Length: 83
Ligand SMILES: [Zn+2]
Image (cartoon, rainbow, N blue to C red; front, top):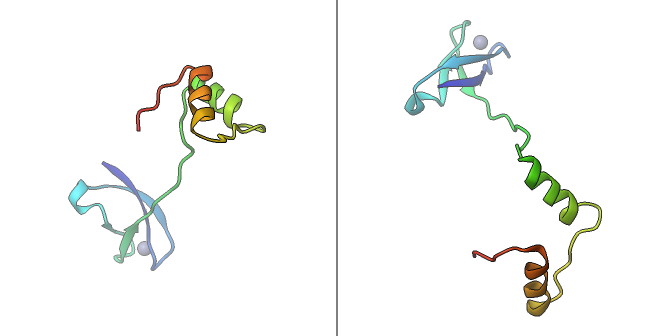
């Protein structure tokens, strides 16, 4: 796997190949130990889900006012509660 590393010594960031078990650190060009950099990537959503989110969680979020209302909403939206 290729991971992103940041060197605390020289400030360099680079991609380095590493085994999953050894991914936490990588030797930098300067000789110091670079640390795994966690980057937050945008969440990928499918167009269908995106449309759903836009419609129901966009500017006008759906407020569930109670169990009966929730059941009604689930029915209206064609959803099934799984948990
Ligand atoms: Zn370095």
